[in-house]
Length: 226
Image (tube, rainbow, N blue to C red):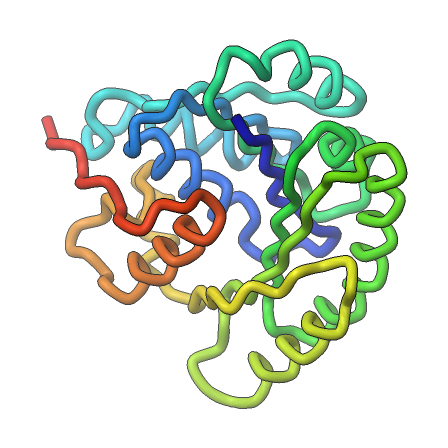
């Protein structure tokens, strides 16, 4: 069992999209998954509610989602950990008690980073938060990858250079593009792997991240529709 935090301290980097896609893909691979929504905006909760009521996502969410904030993230996740194969915690885009509580109990921290100037400026604060978390959770692994990547230009390379220079983070070369298919999927309560018609490149990119984090090289087949 592993506890994975999807976080950061800059809004708009796609944390909830990543967290919900990972939860659905883990559930499709046969694992019992808990998705913890530790973001006050409750995007993951809204996505799960939509998924539970959607004709497209037949059979319900496929995972359990609970909203938790503050110190309850630490205490309740510890209490529930043995009941699930995998736990994903979706935190907000700020340095909050919820995010720090999540880091204290988690195995790994995954930070999506958009190729924007403001994102780079916040990464030093993220690194400091990781180092502080490791004082109480020394085994915490931390990764960053480029999300919502630009289709052209130098911004992707520039943010990759910044990420490679941060010792507290391991930079993953699993870039995910800024693709409208992710919005279309989320709007229907679906993971990108379930969207029809399919965006093969988007599926390939998310599958690469999933494989890097969970050691699964092939995405589970889609569920049958009702």
